[in-house]
Image (cartoon, rainbow, N blue to C red):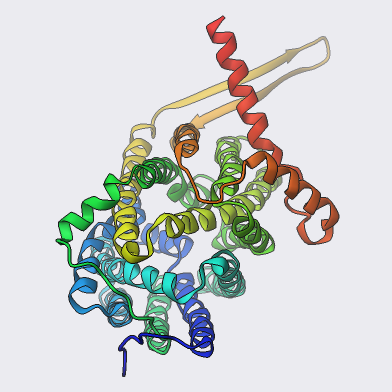
Amino acid sequence: MNLRPKVVLTPEERHKGMQVIIWDGLASEMMTTFTGSAFLVAMALLLGANNVQIGLLASLPTFTNIFQLGSIWLVRKFNNRRAIAVFCSFLARFPLILVGISTLWFSGSVQVLIFFLFFYYLFGSIAGPAWNSWMKDLVPENMLGEYFSRRSRYNQTLDVILSIVLALVLDLIKNRFPQYELHVYSIFFMIAGAVGIVGGYVLSKAPEPQSFLSNANIFSLFKQPLKDLNFRRLLVFNAAWVFALNIATPFFTVFMMKAMGLAISYIIILSIISQLASILTIRMWGVFADRYSNKSIIALSAPLYILCIVAWCFVGMYSRLYVNLGLLVVIHLFSGVATAGVNLSITNIGLKLAPKEDAIVYLSVKNIVTAFFSSMGPVVGGLLADYFTNRSLLITAQWSGPKLTKIGKLISLHEWNFLFLIGALLALCALELLMRVREVGEVEKDVVRRIMRTRIKTNLKEYFIIGDIINWHSQLKAILKLGRRRISS
């Protein structure tokens, strides 16, 4: 297996490499779907996991990013990003197979699950910076948004189809053969590990442009992004944003399973609705991010996602299931639209602000700093969930008349709902930090909003999901400013 980089890549080699990365993404997505958040949470709950353990499982993917400093050292030592990404990808897949084996033949436990998944995420995190830097040199900068939005669209389509099949299989086993439910999860993990190993082999076929790194001390390099004022502002925003979101988001699935008692198929269908919304809109976000700026896209899509988190506080407060399901459908629909823009733009703005010669250092520092705060979010969320277990807040409205007396719930907060409200408020505060970041070629969000509105109206058939959501950020800020004026007066 020849993994040596090339000094110059021909257009044909570059095109072939970009196609290979598409297939590698499909293999990775298949692996992630088999062990995805809903299935992983369901398996952990089946093993008897508590709120803190659920938080630990949710924090592992980001906590292990702290070890990306090792990736910088490996790239500096061997100057071969492809070899590092490929070998670490292989090493990351084997723990998944071990999780399946331990659970299938030795009953397993939450502690064993956390132990093996730590190494799965660890080697994946070490591979990440090498892969990101490699992709930055392989994919032309003016195509980053369009290319990765297309790759994400393919991945999400596969995730939708596969998730439906797996959910139906799980519900069938749970209803007819409940004693084998845990065995099914074990098989899922073993299949995921095998597919991941095949994906690592596919990844090895993509060429790598030769990179040229400086000979500076590694710790000096590590400090360099922190001295960059603009990049430091991006780090502060990103760290605050992921901490706020991860207090709440890992517990959405737990809430639906434990508080609402929804079957895994319902949860997967809701997830698919979110994925479909992302698939239908991510290309548009990518095109506008390339044409205008990633920062403007974040400023438009992030407030919508915050409103979706707030809406979770109202889920479960209605006595009729179909009303709660309808609200969940709306939340997942708009969450998919919003996350497509937020995730794509946050990734791309990091790639754009990182200098080409030190891209791996900048991106690794970004991942390490945000990893710490992102991993703290679910742990804090788990502790808060335990704290609010026996606490609740109920606000009602009562109508009394000669023939009718009616009491309706306005707000009903308990356990997880408190997390959702806290996470939304912190995310709103974090979003204000984005205004301090400067992006090359930045276009004011008002201009982008106006252009997007025109584009949406003339392409209603293609972009019908977006509607008027691009106005929500201004409305939200207007409400906040009005509130401040009233307080000051």
